Length: 417
Picture 1 (spheres, rainbow, N blue to C red):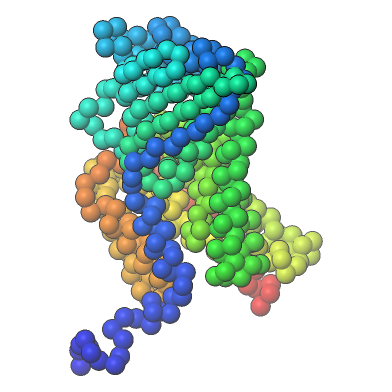
Picture 2: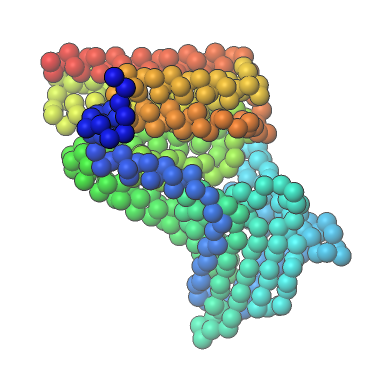
């Protein structure tokens, strides 16, 4: 007999009702991650240098060149009447090649040496999402130098990008402070700020996991996540980029963010698979040490199991997991603009698997994959496509990494069973 509203029986499956407190927090965090809003981070420091010197560091003029670690910023006056400057950011990769990007800024207001306002140009009619729209610089005389106030105005950004916007602003203002005071950018403070974001979000995640799954498992999860995300960071270095940044996400895991945009789909797929790939090498090594009696301990066994399960989950072919990021690029190569239908189909399969295994998390991520691809979208816009050889290598790597984790779990179960 069909169930109707008012029956004593629940109309919702028991495994969803019994999912625990973690599910509402997971859904809330996912919603917050997808929520875009404009962000206006501000930073203010005391610079022990004259006001005119500090102001000149950001005041553009034709032919101006600044060096920020491995990135060179070149200013070119392209419209003298409207005072529009082209800023070229050229970063030297470890391979020796240059990766360039450009942006147009107009000097909207200049009250030397106390106020400068630069407004973004050239994006009329385009999306302002994740775009830096305006920079405001204020300088005031202080007893020991200059009060330096810097404000960035960003277009709509998701939660993670909002955190990074603030970290980048504070890192940037300390770079400028060092340049004004010593003649060299303060890269140490910039690095410590990025590290601080990782540490603080890591501690928050540890507490969140500890309250839901226990403190020992929480510690093992954080350790496994560190190894996984270091794989992504290492991938960025191997493709020639500077070290990226890492942020932990309570109830979700962590994410490594590159400093520069990818240039090819091959780089995107390689970086996605390096996280679970590096972790697979470690879990295989710990399994061998346990099997031969070198590391047979409760801690090593639990870490190996946690790392294997975590990375197997991350290999699920749904966005935003690494398996889904790799699949997205592969399908974009194989199916062109029809790739989103392939991603929706895979998402439906994951939902079906979640219902069969009674796992709410699979339902959530399968649903995300379906919803994200209902509307037409451009996948990997501007990236050079994968070659046929790269598609084959991506598939082979994915299969090998997945089989490695299944083998690890099978062997561990056999040893402790």
